[in-house]
Image (cartoon, rainbow, N blue to C red; front, side, top):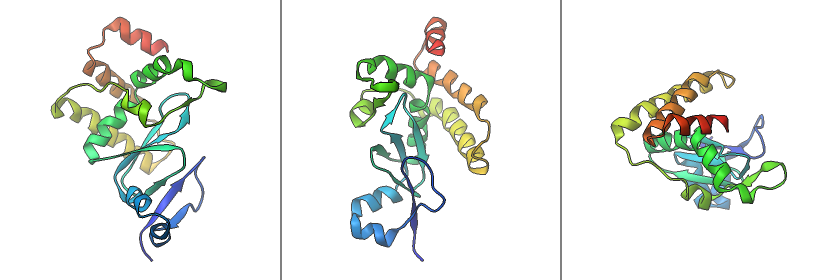
Length: 173
């Protein structure tokens, strides 16, 4: 029995397994993506929905995949899932909203999110919080991680040097 990848498409399934040998016959590129450390971003959402994967998941149709080094991805994941990125997406792509407020989120939209210039020392506390959230969710998918998420938002606001007034505007939605 070889390596296998979980498949995610429109929800989670009890046995969403695709054996690597089968995937390799379909697409070597998709096999490499499945095995890679990555962020998977939902293609249709009201705000950015991004998950981290260490190389166990085959991303479904209509997703954006960001492949990279683990710590860089975890920092980016925090930015993408922050209140600030959601606020930016709602404002920047308001005219693209479809019925129900959904937006097509693809690589172009991801590339337009402004990222802060920062040092690894300022990224590390955010990465540590992401690690805490991932561990809690691995142990219990229903785990409460609201405190960690709020702390990430606070640290992200600081990276962008936002004023209390700007933060209040973002928090109001």
